[in-house]
Amino acid sequence: MKQLRLILIPIVLAYLTIVALYVGFQRSLIFHPTPSSGVTPKFYSLDYQDVYFPSSDGVTLNGWCIQHPRSGKKRPFLLYCHANGDNLSDLANVTRLFYDDGFDMFFFDYRSYGNSQKAPVSEAALDRDALSAYQWVKAKGISDDRIILWGHSLGSSVAAWLATQTHPAGLIFEGAFPSIYDVNRQRNPWLLVLPFMIKDKFQTASYVQQRTCPLLEFHAELDTIIPIQLGQKVFEKAAEPKQWVVVKGINHNDFPSVANQYKPIIQAFVEKCLVGKEL
Image (cartoon, rainbow, N blue to C red; front, side, top):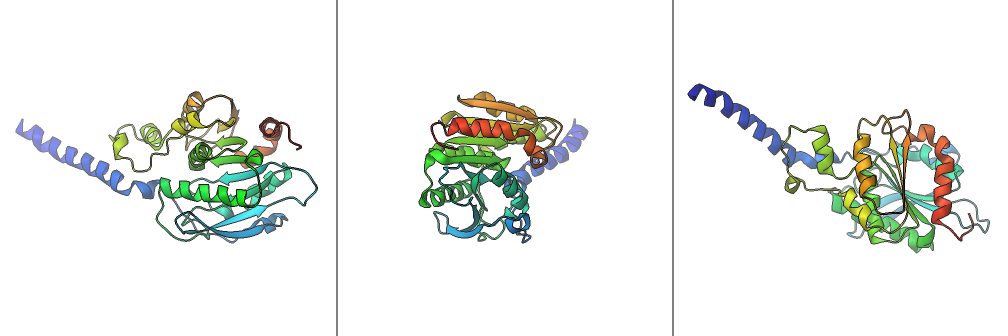
């Protein structure tokens, strides 16, 4: 028995150390702020407004506003919430895709990302930043019934939360997950981290039950970052109206490469969201 204890005690201590390290450094595992590379929509022949605006706690954020020339049309206005490892310069090519699909848009960086001011990151901080971006769009005279929220990966949870605080016309996800706890259980089933230990919960499955706007959820068939089963859990929890689309043959970050194939689905969804308004 003594020999067994001599073996088990170091193993248990090592395991508890791993759990403690995860709990202590979890934010560095979730958030990956990166600096701007300098790539802008200009590289893709798009004019844009480079915007600096305050978050609700005074942190200065950077964003890009891109609009079509005025023609009397009321276009859908996309507010994009990016993933945990992206920044605006990584998404310059995506602005071209949305522009060609007929969207006006506002892309923004959370605090510490890209050219936004460096400040501590957390779920609450990203939520504040997203709400401030929404309010910036509204201040430009864009009405709620034109705004489509789009979230990718971690940004899906930010967009889902934002949809519970505002009244957008529609909500679109790429690679959503139910919560950080669920992601951790999927990736590390051996790691005993309980929900109360998680600081930034990102409870997307809860948020989608509270929203009132239509939901369109895309998920990559071969997603190795957020397995498709996690996206399905979000969809199952979501209130109606909702639509589920599996994107065949791609991984988590590959949607832009096949976006044109899904253009009719996106446009049909947007038309339903903006029913009664000229597109």
